[in-house]
Length: 210
Image (tube, rainbow, N blue to C red; front, side):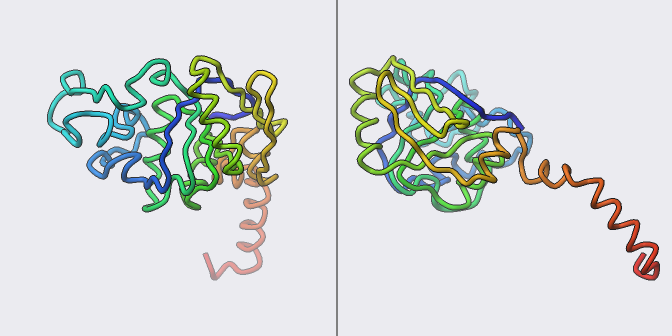
């Protein structure tokens, strides 16, 4: 998993609350498990004028010019700004894969769906919770200065935009794992030697179990 320490990028203002994972990546695109190619279908239902069309080649589909991901400079953004309860709904990990494949490294919102938030940490995407007031301020700044990048500093637990700075809280264990580029499996494998020692002892003391 790609580690996250510090990232600067254009903020994508997605001013919507209660965005569920089916809106992030519709169900018809869940057939692959290799984590690649999902970015083209991020927010597919709103991003294209022919939503959900799995038969037409991507280069022939018609982008919706009114959607934020089809507008410069936000079409090259890497920090998504949203409203409360982002990533609610089903537990599909593919939703995070789509964000990541598009190039998004961090998502900022007042709150997140719990499973979506966990999936972010396990895939190298940083979910940042800020107060509603701070989120509203960021929305205003993103429209006033769309080209200006926001710096997300996980090591320092802060956001920086010019002279402005916002602090955020993140679980210490999640923070250390993301800084090291470790998902839940990676954290477990760090203890592989102790696990092997335990299994060897059990095999000696209770061989009938094996």
